[in-house]
Length: 491
Image 1 (cartoon, rainbow, N blue to C red):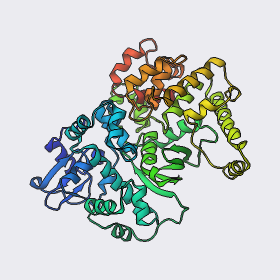
Image 2 (cartoon, rainbow, N blue to C red):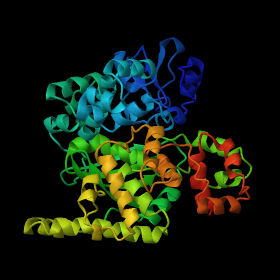
Image 3 (cartoon, rainbow, N blue to C red):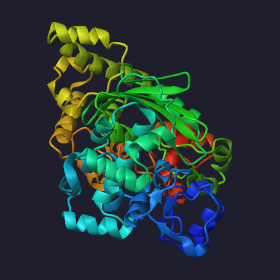
Image 4 (cartoon, rainbow, N blue to C red):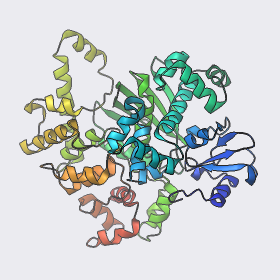
């Protein structure tokens, strides 16, 4: 749908045909009933004179509308344009999803983006119909609903976990957004709450079909680092390093959604954990638009037809992805995994030798998957832990230092061009690594790794011109990252 100008006719047609593809692109406000819906809502199509369209749920809430209970518009996939767009609004939306406003307030968000609060507010209002506080509040309401409906937690605990400043603020927001008191939302769902441990939450992550789940799981399985992640029985499991503590997630692709089971040390990490899992599996993409562009090339048309809905596997942790990319530079995937496992084992030994208590904890948790090392943990490791040539070890340390002091921002809201420039300035990081990170850590949908040997092999297998691949790939813009994944599969 390109940049959504709220073109009334196009939006109304999407609503009239209940087109799922537009869920999350925009929201339908029905002034006669005072509710807002996703475009695919199964309710009777409202009359034209009673309809208004909004670029965000927050904008619909700001107009005094409440969320529809049938189509649950807050559970729609996010707009695909926040993945594609590298501008300030796109970066702001990714950071708000990651919970930055809840943790650091609007001043923290503005500082991360390098703008004044006033200017940021103006830009978001112009594009999204709502400022950063309202956008963050809409997200808090969604987090609260998930916790109310899927856990047995008390309402005060939920208010805190969802990021509200007080129980009163939580009650008021839930009533305003869902036209129900929190306790009514819970009884409406029935009391069949899953009997799971404390801090365990199960939810469904929506996506726009089609989704080629096997390609995603294959890609992640081949590169899985022992102790951090594993794929078994059609489910991807991994440890997470989150803002308030560790977590674990199990992700199982199903029809129309991905089932997610999260175990969190601190429930305030629910929104960032969900945002990172959505990013990892590229769930906000618009695969129909991507595939249409790639299938227009006769060389790619057969593979697109055979495997629709291929996604770009991204990252839950940009620093982790960077370390993995550096280690994998001139070695096979298998030996990179071995080196990474050795690096992680060094952390465990280091911790386990601290004292008997942590040794016992380590023993208790050895079946658990844990998040990757932080930059600070990498900097604390002794030389012997790295098991790699001196120059590569120093590259990893240089990167860890740059991320720790804020010189390089590999978070979802990082400025793609600036980050690539700063990565290239670090000794030992070349164009392949920087572009690979733009694709996987920063989510750039338009990266072609044309110097990659496997890409060259894949291109040859599909009968593409090897020497002029870069020129040929111009027709795949702005989705060259997706072509890159398809060429890897062809290899």
